[in-house]
Length: 373
Ligand code: NAD
Figure 1 (cartoon, rainbow, N blue to C red):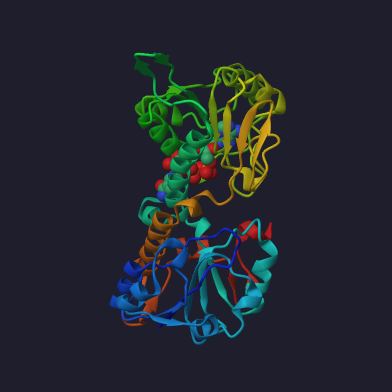
Figure 2 (cartoon, rainbow, N blue to C red):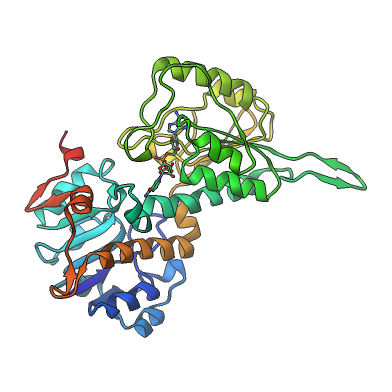
């Protein structure tokens, strides 16, 4: 059983899919691990540390040759996989909706591609869930990014020269990222409020000491689909939410948006008029900018200014904390593969529930039902 760990090629991707810690654990399962030279450098994992953990450090083509499992953070360019064994597993965050055409090419290479984003939200898969581990870090970093661009302080300060008032920070979308953003902003001393379409988040917002901002008495606002994900809202709900949120946004210094709907463009939560209603010097962080953006005018990869408000649209926010993001991502992959490790076969054998959930290509075809509709 040979596992290949690839160096990421995507722009601004600093993470790596295996760390020396997880390499050692895979070797403990009797696997051979071949790491592409320099794979961990951008995340501060030196080649020597992988070598000390028992991996061989080789070129990309040598890593791929004869590999049974290929680990990556993002789906690699199919052209860069020449020489890979037909039947090998490709285990990565494959962005299956955004990079649909690539999946056909993985299929044509004979790969069995496993999209880690499709990990089901069930208790036993929690430790394998890359969306949670990476969103948590993104929520934390979003608040730090906002603080860095904000020309005032977060906490209230009573000084001899006078009082500095606390920043008012509003989190829109209280999933994993939003919860961590609330917790981080509270630690920095901001006055925090938050909203979501899922009614269940109300208690979670309160438990973190923040103020819930919720549309009441509008039909169809429960907003929870399968697996805890949000569903698309009714027009009636959207109108009521926009009105409530408009009044609230006008009073905020900082807004962090994290709202996503799987397989669809991110919902638009903040209009240009709402941005204009904020005080000059305000800051908005759009964590959904790469999925189409929650904020009108947000630009992926840029900080733009509109009406005196800065709109931060950093790409790939987890990669901005590359070391911790890699460590958690790598553990997610190890937890996944080791949970299914069949000692006799000397390789992982997936069960039906999780296998069918994550497998997107097999036998030369795209096989996932969510991608065939
Ligand atoms: P997500 O990244 O898909 O979306 C972020 C948040 O945006 C969600 O809370 C969503 O409800 C919200 N949202 C969507 N449209 C919105 C709108 N128009 N206005 C305001 N908010 C909107 O979500 P996520 O962070 O992955 O988490 C969703 C839920 O799933 C959470 O309750 C989380 O705890 C749960 N979860 C469970 C597991 C597990 O059991 N294994 C793993 C991960 C997450």
